Structure formats: C-alpha cells, structure tokens
Image (tube, rainbow, N blue to C red; front, side):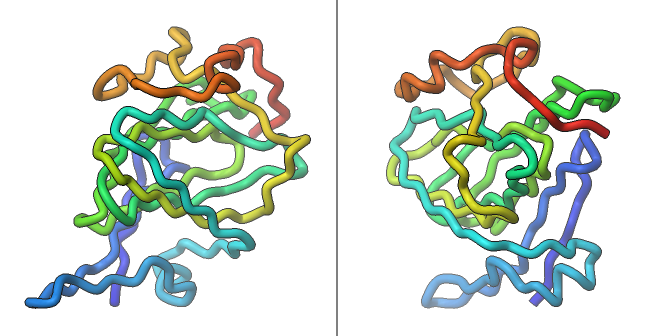
Length: 184
C-alpha cells in the first residue's frame, strides 16, 4: 500500500492520495496507515474519528477549536463527493485569510489534511455523502468556533450555492470578527 502526499497552495495543507486496488468486486484502499504515512513525512497521532452523512447541497463549516484544544483533521469522503475547504486563521501567517479547496471523491481515494490553525468546512456535492475525518484532539464544546462560510473577505468559490446550512453556521462572524488564538 502506498500514499502520495502533495502540498497544496498553502503548504501546511496537504492532499493525500491512497493507492486503490480494483477488481471485479470493487476496490480496496487503506484509509490510514501510520507507518506508511510516517515514512512519507506525515507523522500525526489521532485520538478521535468522526463520521457525517449529508445530502447534496448541505454545507458544514467553517469550524475550528481554540487552543489548547485545536484539532488537526484528516478528511476523507468515503461515499459520494464533497468540496472540502481549509482557511488559514493563524495571525502572523503570510497566508492568513486564504483558503484551499479540493474535491474529495470516494472513488479517487484522496484526503485533505487540515492542520491546527485552520478553519474547515465542506459542501456535499452528491446525495448520501459520507465524510470521515480523523482528529488529533477530541471535540471540546466550549472551544468550538465558527467562521461564516460566505465571508467576502475570504472569498471561497464554492461550486454552487448551498441549499442547507445550520443556523449556527449562518450566524457566524466573518474571519475578522471571529475569536482566534493561533499564531505562527
């Protein structure tokens, strides 16, 4: 098994693509192999796995947790397709307020690494979309924060307008008004 790791436009955000082995039954791939990833320079420990199911048009995010409860997330679509986004919210970063977006497709075997100090969100591109993500820290309700997904100062180019967004996400401030405590 192998994993290809590619730096994105913001070098701390990575796209990981796992080898896929197909036959007449379908395909097989490894979602996470600690030793193979460490050998490729990706050496993180994960303490929590999350799974979400969404219909086409559902937008989740942009979410993050304040330090000392920050979470790095390895995000993978295991059924369907999503447009996955990471936004740099680290003060002092030359890429502060910039974003990276990737289509994650269950049939491609690709994943996005969203490091601590980045807000994360995604738009479901298909019905019955399942997204699994591994987290470097546990969810802590009082540390959770949200930035508005359509903040014009960030300017994310979503593939289409979402049809369903949680009220908490709609009420979120823009990046400039959001509480953040990450720095470089």
